[in-house]
Image (cartoon, rainbow, N blue to C red; front, side):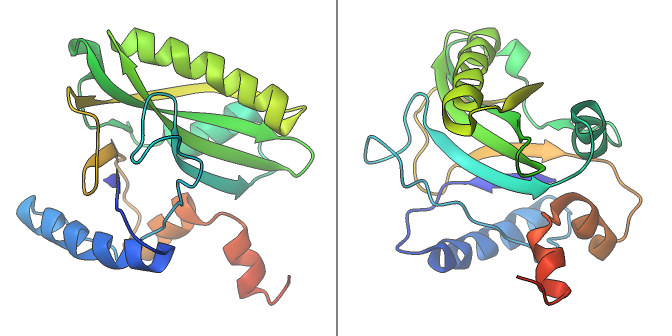
Length: 197
């Protein structure tokens, strides 16, 4: 299970230090194994004291030469993957939506998770589509929203520190190291391992 939570901290390292005990505790309660991998994203562009409607709450860049349909099949549909909530059965509330934008100039894909207050999952998906296409056009320039949209229902209250904002399950027969390499190696790690800049 991939899980993303909000932490109010003074640095990425401090956020990870808060997140790891929480991840270990959650894994233990649910009979899962925490793989010891944590990543952080600084939500520095928030318009409020905590995330609000339309804010980006997570982003990950991954180098890949795969075509958009192959990229989505490789990283988001392998093993019957899916969000760990029932957004289609939920009504008005808070949602997060993960979308993927291609940066063709760099051979990179960016996974972005944004927060939406909506009457339904469909409303959150529509709002995220408009925002993601604008982002691809205005920020990336010649970017492409690849069409992936994974929705996670958060409930009625606006999320704050320590709240889970996205959870995603993926079935895999890979051992933990191979799993992390397959799904979380962004390309930068490979460059560092090979001693390149």
